[in-house]
Image (cartoon, rainbow, N blue to C red; front, side):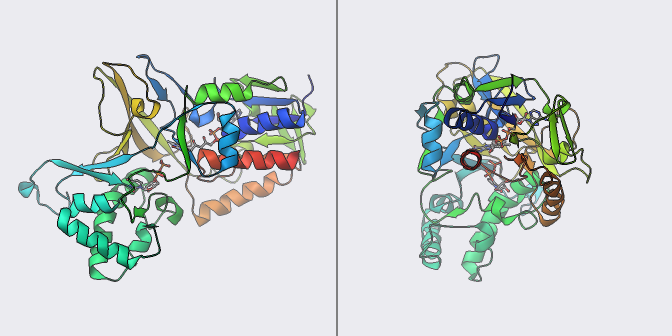
Length: 397
Ligand code: FAD
Ligand code: UDP
């Protein structure tokens, strides 16, 4: 069968583009996916205990983009869900209190750190006073990034900044990136600002929720179109050849658009060296109890060797008495070893320059389009990728 468009990868990038091109452009689209399933990193499935889990990390949908929300809403209904996260940390600052003086115990506050977190940390009265001070210092803002807050020269605000840096950011960021907040791209910590309000939601977007029956059924519905053929368990690189500006599929020149959503360094045989990534190990535990923690995700911002624990029932709303599944996330450098998945691009000038070399190679192929978190080597949320897939499809139509 002849195809008009070839898409590598059936995650958000590939699936949204496939549907739009097939449905609105009448294109015959072939989607090749290496994994045995569609959905990319948003894939979910029941575990052995029947709990709906996210196999590649907790995914919560949120967007301000009406077009993206409306588009996806054609393939799923939504469960109304607003993600809330708390920090779980030792009452004693492990670095400031000598071992013999530790009182023990743990405490909690909302993340992003907000005016209520201040009260949890400094007590109700002092927290209230410091909150007023912050509001006066940033009268026109609803939030401030930790790096911005650390620039403030007022001694009391500097003390708040130090507190938040120490209790929310520095240890968590070291665990997640192996680097300090100053060393990583500032846009990364800016994702989790200090809130100058009592809003304790993790995201403030206009549209938030979880696909009512899970992400995988949403993807299956999206890809279920007569113009779309999906082959799973197929490594596209074993069927593609790139040479002299032409792309061959199964030995034949493929002249139509090729939308590639995998790793760009891999596409070009790592010829300039591998692009650096962070990967994650997920440790699942199924427990014989109704519920493990109060929130969907609890961040271990100071101690522990994992970053966070997610309890899926909070996210999905699944009702299943007597059993629950939780997952801890352990971050480490990606080495490219068998089975490792490159989850997070490490954005910095050197890595961007390396990516630019691969991009220049890709630009030698006029019908090749790089799309998605891997292919573009960016830290994009699901909605941003869906928006980019729609925009690319608009252009191709
Ligand atoms: P992917 O989902 O990675 O899909 C790419 C697909 O291409 C994969 O299925 C891969 O197998 C396939 N592929 C690659 N190479 C080949 C090949 N050679 N042949 C065939 N197939 C190939 N975003 C949010 O909005 N909210 C969240 O809460 C959220 N949580 C996250 C948590 C974690 C731990 C991580 C890592 C990411 C999270 N994200 C979240 C981001 C979200 O996962 C991405 O935005 C989204 O999955 C990107 O879609 P994509 O299609 O670009 O990439
Ligand atoms: N972060 C932190 N402490 C937290 C939450 C986040 O230091 O409790 C920092 C950390 O550097 C993290 C970044 O903010 O990588 C972005 O956090 P987000 O929750 O958006 O990460 P993701 O869900 O994408 O892994």
